[in-house]
Structures are given as structure tokens and as C-alpha cells.
Image (cartoon, rainbow, N blue to C red; front, side, top):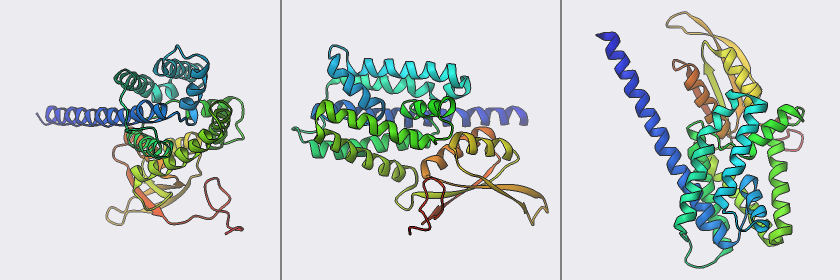
Length: 302
């Protein structure tokens, strides 16, 4: 009876978690789709990544709906990821590859306008806010959109391993935004930069509040080797480890520590939750970090 009872509890807990995942993902997708179809496009704006690329291509192929073209790009990226990076990586993005374009299609069909009249400044600001909330909700559940970030990961793994994924992603966004300037005009490209900046900040706020850009993640788990490998190879952050002793039990265990962004911390937490539910994870907000590593302040400059 006890074993059956535990199984029922585990199933109930799993169903509850999956239901919560589904609700949050749908909410995030709805907000992101609203940003694109109800704010960005009606006000003639654009952005970076796949969204910006589709906006550019749609000017040359206006007969193809935005949602259909976006869905096509998502499928191509997923198939490329599957062929070049394997099923393990492709599995991480399959949900959003299907779900997000579906919400784009719905909002495109409904043809809702968020602003009463055209206002590019308000539209740029609210696009950034909505996209940031969308990203924060999706990342908080450990999912990825499978857009430009996946393309950057493919380029990093197969062509430019010496350049970090975050740098490649930044370069790709810059290229798309600059190209948008030639297609839609310089001002539209500048508004896209504003949107991107707000997006990045709001994403961090949704994940970890308003306190910090850097977090320290401390992990105690028997699966420390697998977790370290994930942080080093997938998140691309450094890891340090030390042996600690629990005074109550007298047991010695290995603790691993990493410094990363709030978004990366959420991804690490989600990965560990699937790998080792008994792990102990501590996330500490850090005011400032100085060092040569990417994302930190240069100690010689500041």
C-alpha cells in the first residue's frame, strides 16, 4: 500500500507540474504573440532574431503570412538542430517550436490592436516589456524558443567553437537589426535596439526580481559530474568545486559553484530538477563581479 501510495503521489505531483508548465508556457506564448501581432507589426516595428528576419523577408514575400513564415523557420531550425546536434538538443526546443507559432497564428487571425492609434515609441517600449515577460516565463520553466539561440549554438558547435554562444547571438541580432535599417529605415532599427534592451532587462526581472544581473549558484548533488558538464558545455560557464562536510551526519559531499546570469541560473535549476530531485540548490544574488570572464566587469577598468 505504501509503495502504491507513493506512486500515486508522484503521479499527482508530475501531473501538477506538467499542468503548471503548460499554463505558464501558454501564458508566455500568448504575451509574446500579442507583442508581435498586436503591437510590433501594426506599428511598423521590427526586432532581432527570427522575428526580425521574418519581418524583413515578409516585405519581399507579402503574400505569405507572418505566422506561417515564422513556423517554417522554426521547423527548419529544429530539423537542423536534430541533424547536427542530436535528439537531446532537439528535444529541448520541440515544445516551443510547435506552441509559439500556433499562438502567432491565432493572434494574426484575431487581428487585435493593443494601441488605440499608431505610436512607435510606446510600441517599442511595450514590445520590449511583453517579450521580456514572455521570455522570463518560458525560461523559468526550463524551455527554449529554438530560434536564434539555437542557431548560435549550432554555429558554435560546428563552425566557431572558440566564440561563445552569447557573443554569436549578439552578432546575429545586430546583423538582423542593421539589415532592418536598410529595409524599414534607420529609425525603425533604432527602435528595435530600444526594444532589445528593455527585453533583456525585463527577462531578468521576471526570473529573479529587480535585484541583480549576476547570481551565484551553489549545488550539492551526487550527480555533480553530469551537472558540471552541463554548466561547462551547454551554459558555457566555469565551475569550481569543493568538499564540504555535513556536521549532523558527518558525511562529506562535493559542492559545485558557478557564477552566471539569472536566466542561466534558471536553466541550470531546471536541468538539475530533471536530473536529481534530491539536490540542494542555493542561488545567491550578487551585486557585482569583477573578472576577465564574459559577462563580468573588467577589474582593470572599474
